[in-house]
Length: 200
Ligand SMILES: O=C(O)c1ccccc1N[C@@H]1O[C@H](COP(=O)(O)O)[C@@H](O)[C@H]1O
Figure 1 (spheres, rainbow, N blue to C red):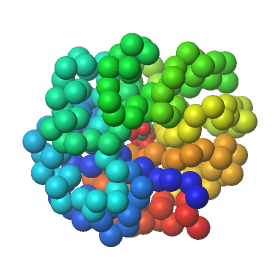
Figure 2: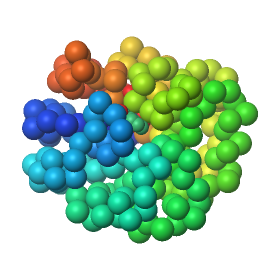
Figure 3: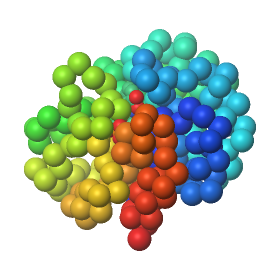
Figure 4: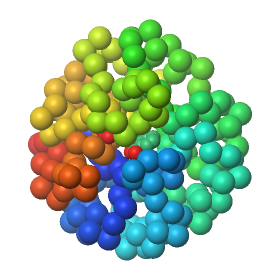
């Protein structure tokens, strides 16, 4: 079954939603973003999270020392890197790493070969943005995906388009943030519908 990650949690209510709806992963954004969270707040939210749900920290070109400190403090399971981090950077961590690639056209998939990492996250290329844009990746031209490592598909996913995305690309996991928000906040019904669609 395709795994689900709900990203950009910031509030106690969000934790209550995911504890009821049980995605496989949840994400906390430690990079510049409207969803940015402090390590103290993230830790207090994670303390209330059901133990089966794995935690992912989202970073963009942060100093290694800072990422290590946050990862240890919050006991993160996975580090999701959205910037220009290279292999040496990735090798500095004991946690699993999902490296994000911003895909403009199918040729951009060749970048994946340069990285040895737990998973490859595919996001939409948007000039000047590192992620969380809600812009949908044009996945029609990029199938079939390389199968060397698990692929996490992101970029403007919603309950309306995720079924086709999964059928077309067969990713290991789908990752959503904007598509399960209403007026800038996570929305229980949208999360429920998204997870039901993926698992249905
Ligand atoms: O969510 C953010 O604000 C964010 C900021 C910087 C880097 C990544 C971010 N989120 C990740 O972006 C993708 C796509 O999100 P969306 O569904 O299109 O909003 C996803 O992997 C988020 O984890």
